[in-house]
View 1 (cartoon, helix red, strand yellow):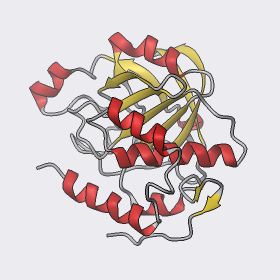
View 2 (tube, rainbow, N blue to C red; view 1 turned 135 degrees about the horizontal axis):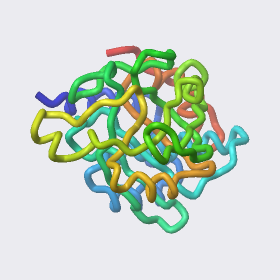
View 3 (cartoon, helix red, strand yellow; view 1 turned 30 degrees about the vertical axis):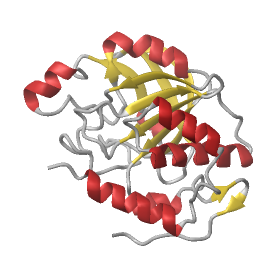
View 4 (cartoon, rainbow, N blue to C red; view 1 turned 45 degrees about the vertical axis):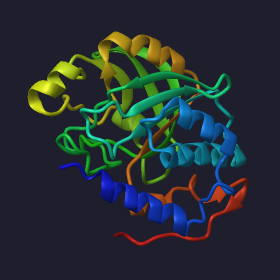
Length: 234
């Protein structure tokens, strides 16, 4: 049974407690535009992703033209990765994406920053360079959140293509294959998707985890002002 209603309630609670309204959202017109481009996405998750990138810029991170949003509250059998061109306000990709084998079965439930955990990590990442590895053409990511994803480079959490990410497998076994923690995508679109995101773009991985929502340094400011409210675990 899908857990999306509970997830939606947790996200709504966080946003309300944090004072995250239309007046506080990062560039509301951009959020509206992206939400229209991606009707299957939760617009509040898109709002959080934009708020995080705006906060990162306010803290000295360079801006980016592209943004990838992963919503791990959705099952792996549903496309839950969106790649946007922020400058042109275009949706470039809407794709399946894997989570770590110790993060959950079809539904993701557990996340970690620990090496060898085989779990996915949450939060805001910045993409680095590409390389050819054992999974083919891959994209390194730097985790920007201390204690949440800042071991991403050490853990080799990269975007890469994988044969186990495909709709046929999802239909056959009730989930797509799982990675060692990497956000793996379909092999057929891996190279162009990676090329769209390489070189300092943002990746935002979401799940309604109250500990992360409260602790993230990029979800504590809006338009340069600190958010002081927080929520307790449900």
